[in-house]
Image 1 (cartoon, rainbow, N blue to C red):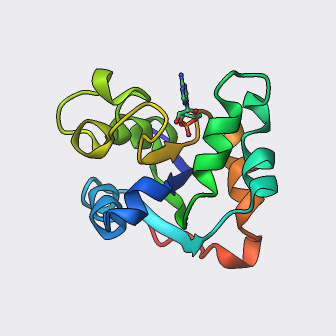
Image 2: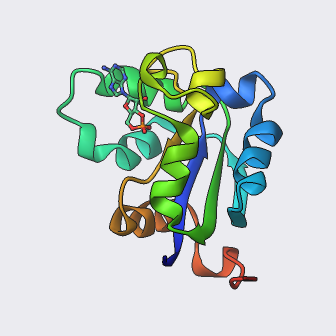
Length: 143
Ligand code: CMP
């Protein structure tokens, strides 16, 4: 087991439906610790920069429009195997395929509006966290 940090977003559909607290509680209840969090409203340019890896995908315009359609909650979460554990708590990208008890199964309405985002590797977690947070915004580990 390794202590890791991962990057998490509660997407506009989650914030719009007043689910931000409930979703953060799920992460905390399962043992992940919030080391940084804030609400932001991304510009189109910021959303395009964040999802640049998907820029050639057919859903890129839809994805980036959606991500700047309202406020989101961005967080850095810490815990044992945080990257894969956070993805397990979120469930599969497509809510129709997400396991019972996962956030996407319980709350997401479509693959495009799937309520949460989480980094897919430790390397991307560091890149994504630094896209939104400076080092001084992340507290030192309390574990
Ligand atoms: P996320 O984990 O934020 O990473 C990229 C996002 O692209 C993904 O969640 C989905 O919301 C979105 N996405 C992936 N596939 C599709 C698709 N086929 N149509 C629309 N959006 C998609």
